[in-house]
Image (cartoon, rainbow, N blue to C red; front, side):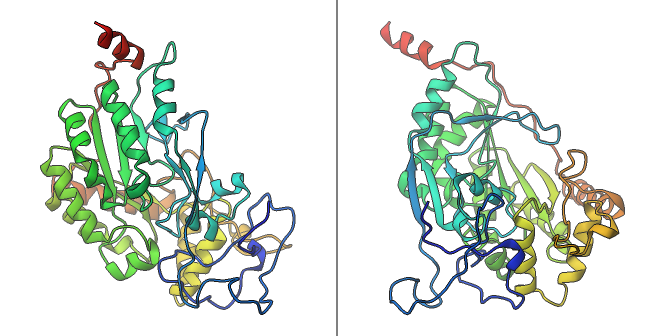
Amino acid sequence: MRRSIPVVAASGLPDAPAQACKGRGTTLPIAHRYEGSGREQADDGWPGDADEAGAAPRTEVSAQQVRTLLSRNDSPDIPFEVALNPYRGCEHGCIYCYARPTHAYLDLSPGLDFETRLVAKLNAAEVLERELDAPGYRPLPIAIGSVTDAWQPVERRLRITRGVLEVLARARHPFTAITKSAGIERDLDLLAEAAAAGRAQAALSITTLDPALARILEPRAASPQRRLQALRRLHAAGVPVAVGIAPLIPFVNDGEIEDIVQAAAEAGAQAVFHSVLRLPWEVAPLFRHWLQSHFPQRAERVMARVQDLHGIADAQRIAHDGRAPRDYRADFASRMRGQGAWAQLLEQRVARAARRAGLAQRMPRLDATAFVAPREQRQARLF
């Protein structure tokens, strides 16, 4: 596949902080783990090969006709069994996003490509209806937006998520939705109707209340205050809402736990949950580079605490024998919440803040008993 963006190998990230690009989480087209050969960017002197200096790289959207939409999960630390994602890649550009490595399966970079080269599943609603109609289908709550945000900016134009919600509404199917976008307000009519029947819940991820930090941490997501406003509107419409403080990053946003919980409660949240920073595959060097670019004086301290949270042995914490330092362990028992004294302290702080604010740490079960398969809907229309 011909690349429009040159690739930088993970082992060859620049030592000096790269200039931040407004509106993008990273400027690095880091090579993915399946890359057969490394490439370097070079200026050949011809105009038009790059965006204007200082301008954010443009977003490209490719259409895809998918054969399946629902994905199954059997991980014991994830609170849902079925998920649905209308897009691949996410323009929000959150530097910490654990989904970045999924772009490697498209032979695209988990770095800049992940937030600028999106894939839209245009036939999502049609495929979902077919899957709900399969013999023996069992209606379990569907988690919308588990990997990429279903209300990212391109959804305003393509309305794929809207089509999915309309299918779920007709089928009276339970679902949850998590987002960093105020765009979820557009679909309040469908969310409120489903919530009134006990079939829908929403969650808003609020990582920080500091707009300056949010601009560099998750550059194209809604501002923290705008997310709180969306929370208020969802609550006013009768939609149960949880707030996720995810991820908690030591010495970056962990000092805001109590303030975020209190703001969430005042805006109408029903529950709060958290997870610690996860750095699978290519996310680790991307995050390290971001940290050096924006917080060089505390970068070493942050990474040491992240390694503590994931139980990384001392011998694995530094680069040696041509290997990068290890920053993450994908252990079901601890990858979400961490382990050790610091993880316990974070757990206690979130739990204490939730009790003080009157919030739960778990949402109630959704009702799946009213499910009507699409074929039954068609039969009903005949009579």
